[in-house]
Image (cartoon, rainbow, N blue to C red):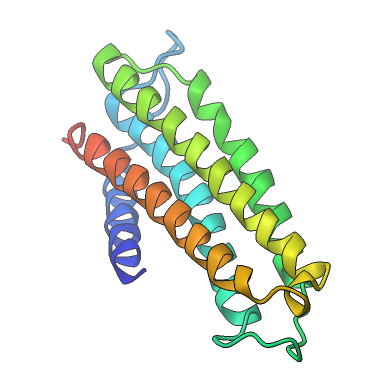
Length: 175
């Protein structure tokens, strides 16, 4: 997951660069390339940060070795899941933004829809894992511990791949 942190650092750098050039929206309602990127990066950071928080909470809440004697408090898992769902919903406003550069808008929106779908898929897997632990099902069926862990990692990696594609698309429109 350190690659994703490097990408987030790059994304933060791009945000800083874009912020320096931020000029304000013109009366047409369409954003300049820089303004559009800035708005996208803001929501990208919001969503990525929320997903990162769920992975951190998972890593801190679920022991490396789960046994039927393990005590797992699912409260923090539930809290971060709800927070992530709210932030993903807020990020959907990106799909309503307009850029003066229609190629930029089309490229970003196409991948951002995929990005949001993958965030939702990750949260679905996260919520399945949450139910498994909060209902103490793991105490009766330890075989699924590895299954849920693997499913989360697969969904997380798909999400990060889309995040990285968006960063690459946005980089094409940095002046």
